[in-house]
Image (tube, rainbow, N blue to C red):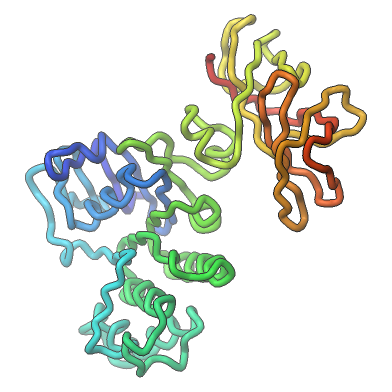
Length: 347
């Protein structure tokens, strides 16, 4: 199957400054992807370049086998068949909601346009607002209209730059699921940019982690969480800490939490000093354990507590425990490790 999108060795320079460095990624038809990373890492610049609003310094971008951009060539945005939703909304103030949604569908039969408008307005819970103007809508409503306007013509590729940012948390989670559902149904290939990892996990089949203009890992959410390729990804995805360990044999680590056996993420000589990635769900509260740690902070999450615990060495780890395991600050509790895939990095 031919890839819908191919980005090859793409570098981007803006205002004399190098922003994106040699990025490679592919999207299959119907695949949903997401770019995450800290502010200023280049993810929005990459999205804008795919859309045609910035020119690559080097490399190329292809859409369904056709090159649409390179260092010396760039297909205009309006001829790429790409829909885009920006953080800053750009609804046409003189058009109704229905007129805005229909804007990209010019040339299609009126009945088809009306049916699509109704379908999309029902999707976002606004079926009665088709004759309203943008100034009559709240900011959140305007954002939803901008989103479905881009989806209306069923583009070859849909690019989304933090489109859910102005929604409240409950509506945001619901909208992410609804948008994913309709994109899957219409087989629309899409790429989302967000700073919210939970949003990325809920939306995307494939997630890319960027930092300082480089794409560090392009992978499934499971692999990013359990098999990060480097320390930055390990630290950025999820809430993990790195603790000192030593390789005792090919499947055993010696740590201050005791010995632990499992599959090592990389093979290193016996005796090597390493750092072991520990997630909050890797540490189990166990009163029978001889290993004790002091409660430094606790965060109540309803079904669970997120504890920050301090070991005797001063090392701090996170522990996710059921909420009925209710412990006080400075209390010492028993803990043990429970993981079988050991993500290690040379120390």
